[in-house]
Structures are given as C-alpha cells and as structure tokens.
Picture 1: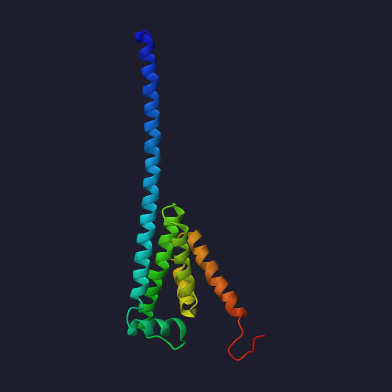
Picture 2: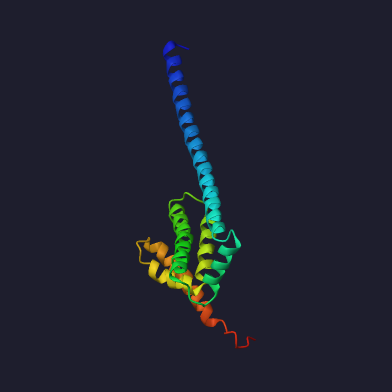
Length: 169
C-alpha cells in the first residue's frame, strides 16, 4: 500500500469517526431532552399538588373550600376574592400544563391531571360563574376552548341529572 492509499483510507476512517460522533451527540441530546421533560413533568406535578393541598391543608381552609364549592349560601366579598384567587391558581396550573404540553415539554399524563383538576373546580356553579368572567382575560384561545368544553360537559350533565326531589330509574 502506498502512502497515498494510506492517506485516503485514513481520510475515510476520519469521516466515519466524525459521522459516528455526530450521531452519538444527537442521541445524547435526545436522551437529555427526555430526562429534562421527565424532570419538568415531576416538578410540575409536585408544585401543582402542593398548591392544591395548600387550599385544604387545615380544617378552616377545607371547610371554606367545601362551602365555596358545594353550598349555595352567599359568600362575603373577601371570601369571594379568596375563592376566585384559588380558582385562578387552579385553572392557571392547567393553563401552564397546556402551554408546556403544546411545546412538548411535559408528559400527557401531567396535562391530563391538571385538566382533571379544572373539571373538579368547575363542578361548582361558583366555579363556572368565575370561569364565565375569567375566560376573557387573555388566555390562549385553544386553552379557552378546552375549558369551555369542560364547563359545557358539566352543564349538560347537570341538566340531565334529576333534582333531589325526582326519582331516577
């Protein structure tokens, strides 16, 4: 083998090594993105869970949230502010999950868990009343459509549910 042939073979080997290195870097980047996505998903779940727990973490808060969500008695102005702030945080975590999911940054299950929380809070007529006002506050139209659909499903279900005085078959 001549020096020229050795040179050409070494160039081919060098190109193969460079291409293999680029594929290894691409694979490593893909793995890093998967790990970052999993970490962001876990962080979002933990923070969302902590926020929801903080709304109920003592008897007074739990009683207030139950009264605000499920009882028809009027709330005082300060209680309305407190409840609406809680709803804003709860629906806000769903919106954050929506935005992260739209960008492919969190797992679908994390998004769905936040959507489930929205469904829970919108079970309350007060929650739906709050949403009817809050929906026009600069949210992504696709997110607004999702929450509108949740509210509509709940309203439609409530319309089909017999009242307490009626018998169901």
